Length: 175
Image 1 (cartoon, one colour):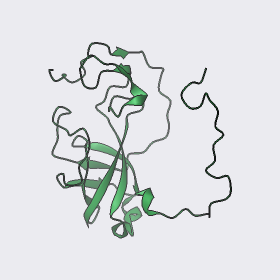
Image 2 (spheres, rainbow, N blue to C red):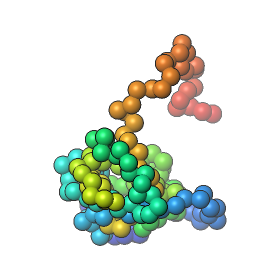
Image 3 (cartoon, rainbow, N blue to C red):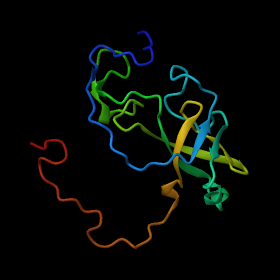
Image 4 (cartoon, rainbow, N blue to C red):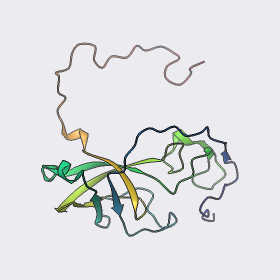
C-alpha cells in the first residue's frame, strides 16, 4: 500500500465539477500555527498528548478571548485551505474500497471546514497554546467555542424531547 501524493486521485475515487461558490460571509479570525507543512506528515486525528500548537487571534477579535482560560477544552473550527473540494467518492485507506465523502473524515470536502477538540494549555496575549490539532501550519481559523459537552442544557428537558418516531425505513432506507 503506497501513500497517495497530494491532489492525486486514487483508484475508485471520483471528482466532480463543483457549482460556482457563493459568498457565505466567512471571516478568518486568526491562524493556526502547527509543526506540519505538508498533508503527508500531518496527523489524521489530533491527539491530546500531541505537540503544543498556537492559535493566533487577529484584531479586532482579541477581546473575544475574555474568560477563555475558564475552559479546559475548545472546539476549534478552521478552513482547510489546501484541500480538494471536488471529490464525491474517496478511497481513504488506498485499499481499493471507496466511500462517499460525507461518510468519512477526509479533509477533501465541498466546504473544507475542519474541527478539532483542543486542550487549552495556556494563553499569551492573542495566542492560545493548545494540544490536539491536526492541520497544516498557517491554517485559517474560523471560530472557537468552549467544548459543548461541558455545558448543562439551558432549558430543562421536556416530555418528548428525545423521542423519534420509529419506522421500519428509518434511518437507513429512505426510498
